[in-house]
Length: 238
Ligand code: ATP
Image (cartoon, rainbow, N blue to C red; front, top):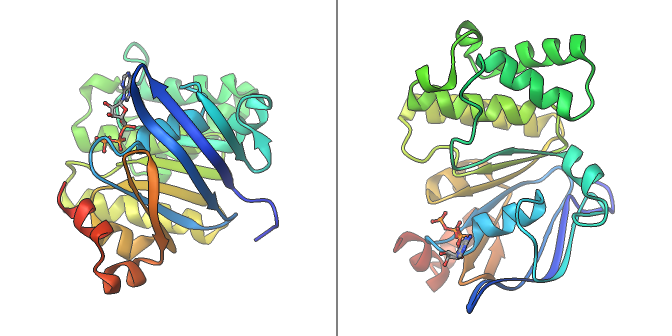
């Protein structure tokens, strides 16, 4: 761990008209942590992630990734992050290997190296044999694997997974967990949003419970469970 946090946000606000999706969010995730974000639908988890990766503009407040301001230093901040989003936002017109190569190219990785990284990422998540297929030809589980592979192609220091195992079967869930655990053991910081408390328990060093755009509690999964607080009730009530 270094002094520079992987993620540091303070008083982060996002308004959509009258709606406050983020209401003064404060959060620090340490370099190397496996950090979980729990919270019911509409808590603001995706909005928070989208601000970190530059997809959504904050209304006010401060957000840094590895010391880079996510607005002012957006290129450096974005190069440090790999995101596997909730939605399947993959280019449908190219073989998946090319999708990964394009992504690498966008981040300034030369073609030969991009090819090597695309193949390595596809192998890592177990879909190298699908490399010439199009996204739409893949099953739901394969699509989830591809989103993870695409996030890995830039070799990110911070991997953000937005509900990566929503609606996937047990085997795939375990496979994804193994890949992500291994990455974290080798130094990648992981931010995971999930609705599954047992997923957070198994994987995360610490967990933040969010509701209505703020953090209600930050603790180890064990402490959170043993407290049996309202925060858990909110999460499980979802
Ligand atoms: P889920 O677990 O369902 O993914 P979440 O915790 O990720 O939920 P967000 O998707 O961040 O929550 O949504 C937070 C709030 O902001 C919700 O009330 C949502 O309806 C609202 N919201 C999100 N995006 C927009 C948008 N583009 N325009 C208007 N309101 C939005």
